[in-house]
Amino acid sequence: MRSIWNGNISFGLVSIPIKIYPATEDHSISFRQIHTRDNGRIRYRKVCELEDKPVESSEIGRAYEDADGALVPITEEDLAALPLPTTHTLEIEAFISASEIDPLQMGDAYYLGTSGAAGAKPYTLLREALKRSEKVAIAKYAHRGRERLGMLRVVGDTIALHRLLWPDEVREPAGVAPKEKVTVKPAELDLADTLMETLGEVDLNDLRDEYHEALEELVAAKVSGATPTAEPGERPAGAQVVDLMAALKESVRSAK
Image 1: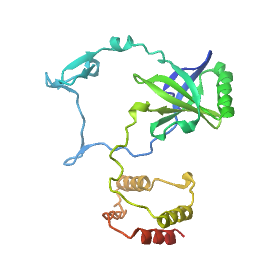
Image 2: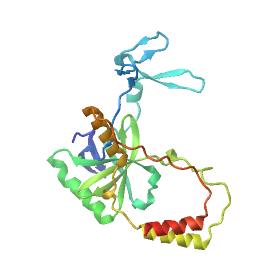
Image 3: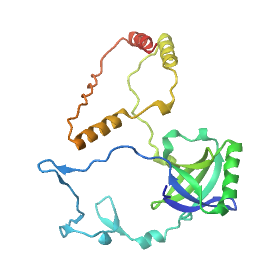
Image 4: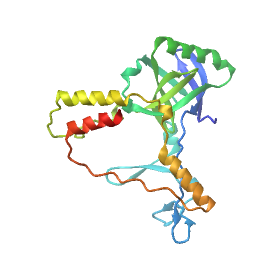
């Protein structure tokens, strides 16, 4: 597994040399865009709108566009001069209960591994301290030109890092909930509880991406020259007004 970041965990005066590895992978199939007339690949060129000609990557910079549409160039030297103490450090700020973190803030997940034998002892110390405290560590670090917030927790014998959104990056759900005033009857809630108990729990390892499997079969059939045999799925029916109690009772019967 290839690391994507090298640095140190700063735990008080303790420094732990680490490497960051992606903890997840996307199993989706990537497609290329083609010209449907002749199956030619569609490719994109980066063109300067003033000169109307392609530009090499070495000639491309970045700029901030203000409210009037004016572009303000921002150079690599400008960015390098910014105070960013977490460039190569995961700076632990505090230890809190995981329940204090809003799941809406949770982002990508990574594994933290040691970089060299010298990191084994302090890494293990931090891992065991997290285990015993039953808390998670909140840290700041820099990645891809931004200072980010992260949560460190123990997964097996490994410390995992979850990227967190900053609190002000989570939008308020204003205006999303139904505006209609409705009353839920106790009997309806009782049936909903019964349905939840009847459906029971599930081992997430038993769930699979059926669309991805069907897509793999389709691609394999096309590659081999065979005619795809997959049947089209049923289109979802439009929203219907139903008797809620009757629907709940039928759902419970079906689940049983």
